[in-house]
Image 1 (cartoon, one colour):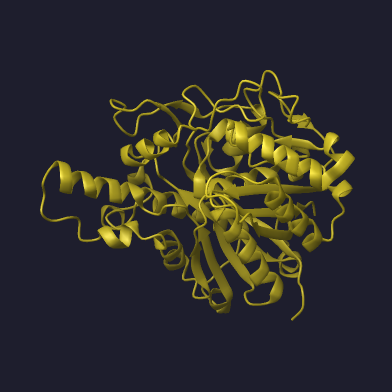
Image 2 (cartoon, rainbow, N blue to C red; image 1 turned 60 degrees about the vertical axis):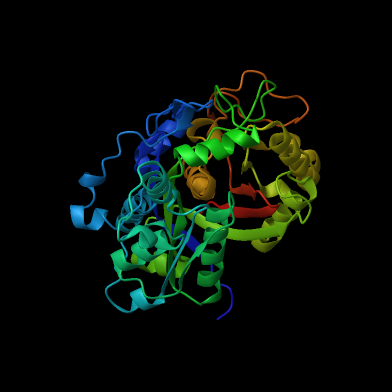
Length: 404
């Protein structure tokens, strides 16, 4: 069927700075930080006591008791975000479109809340029997399955799990399916809810988590901050969206992937650059046509410096004119959901012609030599943008978006 142009007509968000697209947008452009003291788990025994939590989330407001028994917190986030996105898109899936709609979500660790609670009951409390739906709740494919069942989507459905690049890989693969004619629409994005005691102890052991905040590209940065949440996009062809008179949020123009094949944790500038170049080539974009990069920007010393080198390698002299920001400074690092939350921020930047800031940056690191939009959002004419996601294991993904 050849290549078809693919656009986003629905968006849903559950995040530490607001649930719903309007709240999320208002917060990212205001530079509001959703990172604060942990409340989901007891902090006794933890050295890191802050995170980007989705506060005030009441599962009972969204699901009845019977449904809740089947849903880990990560699946709950995915379903709420998907409901927002599908409603915003105006699409209905009762007819033939349901057969031709893909469901592809990303998550890094699956239902780790369920797993952690089960282990606590087994090994601490000594119970002999776990919840009968422990496995359906914790499996990494659970959010995808739950979303497909929610809307009767019987087309291709699977989960992408590539650590911090999971959601970007999911969106990119969904884009390729719709563009290539394997599906006519897709519900895609990512979700993560991994703020458990066991997971936090694991991250503590790596010694890359900040005790006091996420400051990407700042001279004083001292690590990442964990977050949680979900974002879901509805994709369809540009032709179908125009026929329907749909509100088009932006175009998914290209997708690039690469593997560093070097180290399980240390990032590599060459691998990151290959993913960005591949996304630009796929989109038919010259580097100078890109006005904004939503950086992976974790706030660790190694990641930010490596990503800056990669951006300079790809964009050359234009790198100094690019606007580059990390929205992780406001929501934390949501791991498998990060790429979706950042894709949402990138689309909103294109739509509003405002670039979100890198919050909390007082002294941009001169070694990075980038305009990281410190502290305050900036109005700018941006026609095309990249969203970067780079994962442990050297698994890289870059999404290219274009204004429509």
